[in-house]
Length: 258
Length: 264
Picture 1 (cartoon, each protein chain N blue to C red):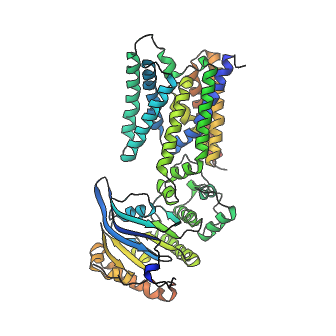
Picture 2 (cartoon, chains in turn yellow, purple; picture 1 turned 90 degrees about the vertical axis):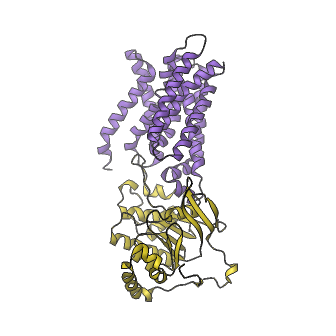
Picture 3 (cartoon, each protein chain N blue to C red; picture 1 turned 180 degrees about the horizontal axis):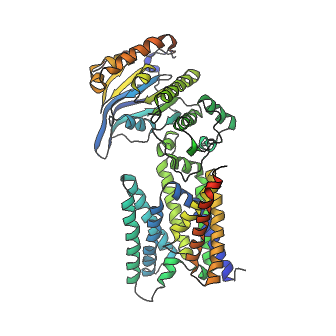
């Protein structure tokens, strides 16, 4: 994307030696990380490894114990939370939901619903949506106001495998159409990793980082997830290589696992 | 007309119904029922303090209700299981208030007026105070409406789009303390939470959007005030509890109707 030397490039979000914890108990330590414009980065890691905490710190919902989070000036974040429980006592149409917190023009709302693949749902009640529809409405909301980056926290939780795969295809389409950065946490290892430019494997700290192939080969990753995913991943990469052009040229110098 | 005590009572009741409706909706949506209980029960302690220090009752109630609301709101942030804690605070607040009032030296106090309200005794000044409070609460909630709704859905979602969910929580806390202070004279400490929750819950089946739910809660709350006043004259029953009873009857009817309404 940008041909500027690295030192002139401004990351969308970067962290320096970020340490996070709840009430004294550290969950993630010493994370130095950056995401650039247009990049797809996936965070993997076992339960309790600090994935969600990292995302919450990046959006500003969790204060660091130490270290820092820097967001680019005027950064617009489209956030899809892990789960969004809407109390049954709260009547809310999809259209009204998409007008929060800022009121939007009707055609922009329709556009976002279309891009998320659910143009017909505007008048539906949020409580009446299926799991897949709900996630797509969350995606539509995240896309409103032309964000610079989409942040998704296990957005396919509760979807079956075809549903999850369809959701990720939608994300890839959106990313291709709009050229925005995507940062996501996921459990669907092979599907997600194959679609990523870079994978971050967390387990209380960054245990390895790099392209999907490098991470899948890393002993740290195998220790956490076993070797089973690697074959599927390689197969997926092979089939999709032709369709997976990168439109940016961020450097891959630090793609090794410590 | 302001000289007619029935008219003043109706006006006072309407003021409370209008302030309680939007706030009550948030109490229901955010599952803060005990939060309302704890805050309104603490009002009794405010009455005791005000009487002991010879200050205006409403001032004491406002201060203590605000303090209790802040305590509850802070504690609920730091604890996962707040249900028990809120229950303890709500009932401890009530008991402490009753004990404190009994310790106030001097003339005997009509306790039931503070527990169940004494809407027929409101004077012009009370009506003015109730409406000032109601309008203040309405303006506060209207001003923060979009942000409050977003924070109610999901605090992280609000933060990600540049909001401050903690600030919105504080706004609700202040609005609750004001509502408790102005509603004390009308329905009493024991029934304020009922006026918050019941009209809002009764409004739910009629609404497709949050705004419609608030309007319905206002309308049903106003109907409950009218019906409760009439009923209390007809059957010579205490007015505050009669209003809440009317609201409960409306709730039962609306819940019964809800399967029919849901097909829309």
